[in-house]
Length: 409
Image (cartoon, rainbow, N blue to C red; front, side, top):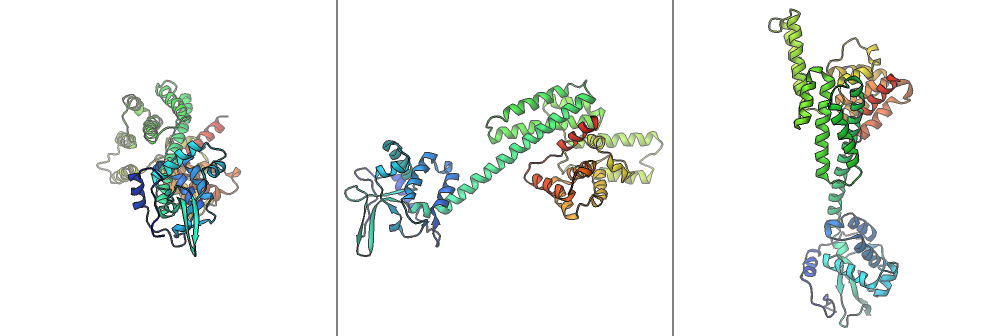
C-alpha cells in the first residue's frame, strides 16, 4: 500500500501531531536504538517533554508489545497493534479511560503516532513479502533518541549542580555550628554567636524541605557572610566590632580587610621597635612580600575556619619547624616539609592542592599529623578526601573541631 492514514478514526487531525511528525523524521542511528535505553533516557527527561510517570507507564506497555529489543529504521516493523484490553492488562488493570487519556498525551507530545486502518481497527496484514500494520507507531522513539538523550543530560547536569550546592550549604552550616560552639567558649560576651546559632538552626530546618536552586543560593550567601564574620573574630580582636556590624547590616567583608589591618598593625609594631620600614631595606622587602601574598590570597577561596583555630588544635607540626605560623602561606610551607615524612607522594599532594586549594590541603596535612598513629595509609586517606573535595563534599572544619574536642577532653 502506498498510503497509510495517520488521522485518528472519526476524529480531526491535530496540528500538534503534524508538527511532531515533521520534526521527528530524523534518521535513527544505523545500528538502531535499544528500546529500554530509550525509555530510561525519556524517563530522566520526561518533565522537559511534558510527560508524567503514568504517561511513561503506558508507553512502556506499548513498547513491550514490540518483540525486538532494537528499534531499527524499518517503520513497518515498529507498529504495534494491541487492543485496549490488552494494554490495560499490562498496566495492572488501569481503567481504559485513564489509559486513553495518557495515550492521547503521548500522541500529543509526538512519541507515539496513530496509524489507523480504514475502519479504525488495529491489525496487521501481509501482502506477499510486505507486511502492513495498523496501530501505534513507535518509530518517533527511535527518531528522537538523540534529542531525548541531550535533554536527559541537561536534566542530570542540573540535578548534579543542585546536589553539589545542597552539599555545600550543609557543610557550611556544620562549620558554622562548630565555630559557634568554640566561639562561645572563648568569647562568650559577643552577640555574634547568638545570631550565628540562630542561622545554623534555621538552615538545618530549611534543609529538611525541598528548596529550589535560588533559595539555596541565597542561603549559601548568608552562611558565607556569617562564616566570614566569625573568622574575623578569631583572626584579631580588633575586628570584632566590624564583624558584628557586618552581620547586622548584611554587608560582606572579604579577607582582604583582615589582611590589610594585620599588615598595618605589623608596620606600627615595627616602628615602635625602632625599625622604620621606609629606611630599613630588609623590612621593606619583607613587607612587600607580605603584601604580594595578601593580594594573591584575594583570588583564592581560603578555608572557612580561622587560621588561629588550626594552629591551636594542631601542635605536632612544631616538631618539624621553628618558623611561626602567621599566614596561610606559612602553613602551606610547613605542609610541604611534613608531607614527605608522612609518606604522602607528590602526586597525592598535588591532587589535594588542586581539588581543595593549597590552604585547605595544608590544614588537612597538619590535622592528619595529629592522628598519624591512627591512620594506616596517609596517602590513600588524603586521596579519598581529595576525591570528596572534587565533588564538593568535603570541608576541613570538622577535622579541626574534632581535634579541639579531643584536646579539651
